[in-house]
Length: 486
Ligand code: HEM
Image 1 (cartoon, rainbow, N blue to C red):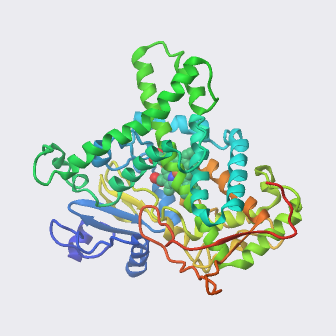
Image 2 (image 1 turned 90 degrees about the horizontal axis):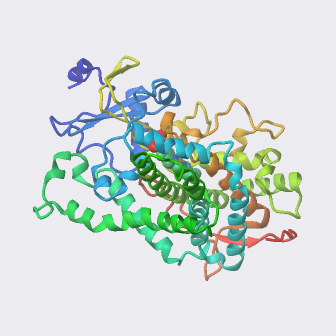
């Protein structure tokens, strides 16, 4: 077997069966840890496995990820075909799209509204969302998870569609969340056989075993509605002249100037898809980063104390932090960086697909391979981040408290190359402001049960594309001696 592997020049990996490959011995949970182990076992940062003829190449180091995703980006920016997503209406999602003109059009829209120099437009809206979160945490602290979820989701809907949501119980959020759940189901690795055997998509819906088609037919109306109802609502209010300015109204004002009807319709499709992608891409990822922050504060209380001191020294105790304070409180930036490094929300980011045969470090990477950048392994590399399992924001700081230039920002948490998350600047601002504002006004502490005992969080995580912490309890207590109006 090893002889065959060497002959093919593939990177090393576990032994597989003929045809089935590693179907039965590829990891199915916490894959990022298994892949990281393979690198130790085989002594190389690039490893490989194969399932039913599909090659998977895992890049376990920052160097390999940079070399391929950035250095050879024209070959490593495609995505695998997602048939089940197509059947359910999620083909409009920018993140699942094959590399090509439609993806480029989506990317242009994201870049225009979410590039570093554009995101300050949303600072007021982000500040309002965070202030609302602080009020919700003050008034109903036991529902803290719901409040964080609501803040992350409602903020992006306001910015994209000008949608004002009163609470998590808003029925519009229900329609949107239902579709996002469908998205998670259909994109979960290995969930649907049709994604491994595309030929199955020609099977008629009534055929035994074609449950996926019946699921897709039942779900598609929800996903279409999720894309269309906010779009239609904004289009109508825009036409009436009585509208809330937002990203979409800015686009609509331009769309009207496109004279060619085909071109206008094509652009409209791209806009509907891009806007629909924004919520799905922004809400859970942002929420999860903030949950990781809460957990870190419980497990590392001395960091909380140091961060609060840094905030007080820089901006005092009588006003809320603003995004403009970022430069003045590098400790908070270090806490945010450490949250993204310690527990990257998508430990394997999203798979890229190689277009042509390639050769890297003497290994053959076949065309059509799914190439996975192991963000976990990259961000837990002890050579770059000593004691990687420990939450230690100081690793990003010099002795004088300024950000170190020689310690890399945890950018791998946002993916790589041409497919890198286009929402990262926006996310950085919102997460930074949330961390700073919570710490300025609140102590995040472990819960106390009815017998007066401290409830220790397990600190454990669940497996998935997004890796959430096992549910844990926390208490949000107003800080004494701090009188910041919220
Ligand atoms: C802390 C929050 C976030 C994290 C950790 C995160 C992480 C990621 C990751 C790992 C990817 C895959 C990149 C790759 O394939 O190499 C991605 C893609 C994407 N993200 Fe984010 N993201 C966050 C917030 C956001 C926000 C706020 C938006 C929109 C405003 C957004 C929009 C997107 C889009 C559109 C893609 C698909 C890009 C493409 O395939 O070309 N994300 N994100």
